Length: 461
Ligand SMILES: Cc1cc2nc3c(=O)[nH]c(=O)nc-3n(C[C@H](O)[C@H](O)[C@H](O)COP(=O)(O)OP(=O)(O)OC[C@H]3O[C@@H](n4cnc5c(N)ncnc54)[C@H](O)[C@@H]3O)c2cc1C
Figure 1 (tube, protein in one colour):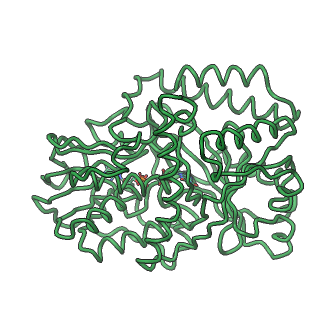
Figure 2 (spheres, helix red, strand yellow):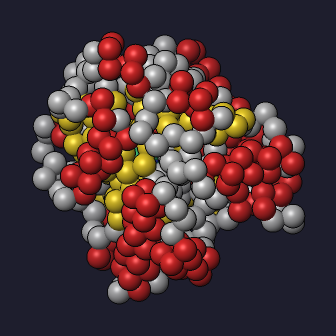
Figure 3 (cartoon, helix red, strand yellow):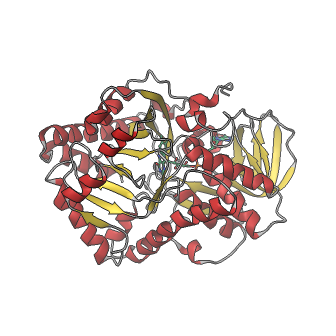
């Protein structure tokens, strides 16, 4: 287990009022009504809604390090009304209705997070300025415009709009900007303030939190730790990119790294140049995703997906010396030349969980007393709230609108053994990077690398 110095987790941890110290291990109860493994957004939202619906439940959250130590305390802070692979559902006439209902539920979830923050007095610097998805080459603009038209054709015309280049540049003055999709359904947040505030909210409601308590395995209703076993009527796995740490759950979710950097606070003059007045989050539609937000204290926090390590290796911290940070910083500076001479003060990274279906799932087997939620593929800030609400309903046997959404009982298969996982994931990152490089440097579609990437993704998804 990592020692303290948890400011290394992320800029977000470093900028909390006090850097968290993991609580020492406490004696575990033999029994609880519900045991939740993992103290990130998924585990805590599940605990929160269970307690709201059934205050008498005895709920224990078991967390290996400290609340928010995983992706929830490290992410880009996009609380977005969208989730991984909803587009696949929308494109398929058979699954379209479920896709539309899911989109509507996700759009509402952005406001639900705001509602709870207000009710529980969680100041997570929430700013619902929407997202700008920029066309970084002229050829990308018609494709993005088509996407807007398609959403409208699915009855989701209120999801997004097309901004022509001049309007888009007024919102975000980045180096290659040929127009953008704007959706109002996204808020920029400080994720560590949200996850730690949520932790306090569940404790206030009587949830017992056990930090410094790595779980070794979960089998049905039994949770095994190095310090003993806990039995519960319902056990929920909420371990996302770290799921391989549970002996019986290996290869369920592929751990993929995502990296982030943050600049020093930027003066108003720099922000006058860049824009993002409403703290809109932004990306530019490249295959190996980049994402950014203007933080409440005036920094640019910028991230990019990185890749997979052989054998699903998981490191507690990503060190600032890792090679991927150089190209991430180069992308940031290329997008915003006005940052010349401005320092990057923080570098960190974390793990996302990827299921074979590339879309989240929430499942609960009443007979086995076991449930699992996650697989957000790096898009889980808001999605974990919806997943937590669904899980609470499933555990309590409630038949609601959200228990009929397409994520329910949709867990993918296990990933194959090595070296297949490494080969597939590495090839995808390589081909995606090659195609992006050609398109960004030459301003034309990359037919060769792009079609290899598309072929491989079709094969793998
Ligand atoms: C760098 C980065 C940027 C991202 N940016 C965004 C973004 O901008 N927007 C967005 O929507 N999503 C983003 N994501 C994804 C998002 O952060 C996650 O989907 C979300 O936080 C998942 O929450 P979770 O609770 O399921 O998992 P986690 O937050 O990873 O929590 C899992 C917890 O389980 C604990 N744990 C694991 N194994 C055990 C065990 N055996 N015993 C006990 N405890 C255990 C871990 O310590 C951890 O605290 C990003 C992810 C990363 C890594």
